[in-house]
Image (cartoon, rainbow, N blue to C red):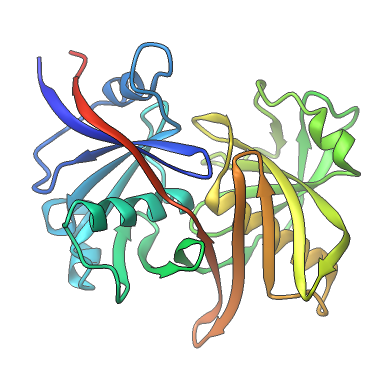
Length: 289
């Protein structure tokens, strides 16, 4: 039986098992990852972050060529691979800094399956540039337990797929039962995270948009926070609000508060996510056979 070192971390309650594997020698199966993330029989987490050098992975070749030494091999709680994790990138950066693996004070590029993400320190923790976002054409109907009828959802791509649904108010948001996976029609080929949002009243306060959100993450279930889901939610509400909508947003999730900024660069509009990243404890654990 193999014993490995781990660290537990979270970003606004979105929690991860972090495993350092700099040389890419550890090949964990989906079942082994799921066992580590099991909240009753394992360490517990919404996902796993493997800290590996980009050059040690075939998936990291482009990141290594772009100068990103480290690659975030992100796995969902069920063991499946995912393109990106916004909260995960910030926790990943915090781990690199605290473990002495990288100096991030001047910013750092981290490889992911959705490309290299630039991460810097911010007043509220760390900020990650999620890259160019895209509103997908068409509409997705979303059925969820607690909603009487299906609601239209806006597909948003921020490096991974999301569908954002606007609700009528706080009562409707609080009444959702997200122990059951929402049904998407049509279902995206790779699935999608589903966000349910309620705008504040008033929506814009001091030039900043304010919303509240809950999320069902594919391969995980409801989580206290989802970084890319926070970004997608702010982008969807900004899209619905029209051209006068602000470029700065505050999003409240069950696990805390995150910031979103939209900035225009040469290749289009980038969305940036900021918030805290916390390392909780470290230890050793035996991998399941």
